[in-house]
Image (cartoon, rainbow, N blue to C red):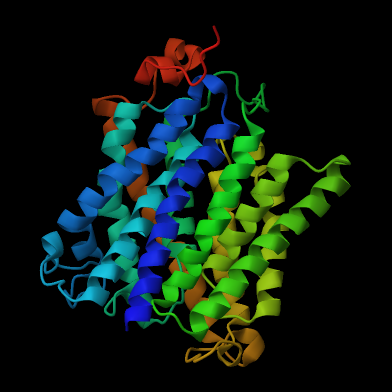
Length: 400
């Protein structure tokens, strides 16, 4: 028991550390005039989401309402959560709630008002994130009862955030000069790789911690996370070398994240060699998916849709084929198509489709309401001068 609590708390700290890692990953990819804005958008999630989670979010996500779609208020303000393991699990799940809206920030880089972001994050956490988590992880949730599987957030986090990112950028519109100026130069590529390394480190808590115990399942999820991220990086590098003749640092970092996003939902349901396949396919498909924004004309600044939505959905679908209860210590779940199952693939497709549709539609509505009331986007003048000055009155670098 004490060992389990120690591992859950350690995992919570690792996932929390992912948010500043994500801030560096995204912050390095924008121009220097928007670097602080990107850091602040991510860190705001560490400030406001725990407040929302304690007061109401956790209860809506896990309250024992007996309904299929939403929890009740039985845990409002952490009511009734007194045992050590329950408190530790609450803290662990709170860090997941923090990083999910932070993922969205990369899509709206360079043009969303920080004041609008401050309003958007708590609303989205309550009306999109909490219900989706209830569907997938609460005992009465409709996806849980199908059953549809999502070990650590492939659908609840990556598909959810990716769908929201797509809706938000459609409402926001394109950056000034995009897509004619397709490749805006990142101001600090070392920050990007440092952020990717921190994310990979924290992802061990993200996935292995989702076992909620220090056991064989956590160990398998740990190994799958390592292999998935590595395979994603290598696959991305190979494709990039074939396509361009070069291997970019940003490409290596993006491949890591693509592989990790793809293995997340399946980390506790597949064996080691299958995790290699998840990561490799994620690296390849996400490489080509990021081109979709140019083809379809939506300005996803830092490729949240191409990596998180596509990677998360791919991993969830692949799980429908490759779930293997014999490959996981203590495995007791429905197998995928390749191991004698069949219904799981359909269940996974249904869960992905409904989560995407719900997240996209509700996020679109939230963005429209904010846009019509306080405004969603900075002025063209502020966009050209940089959000660090317009929204924060600061500069990332002072050269005297």
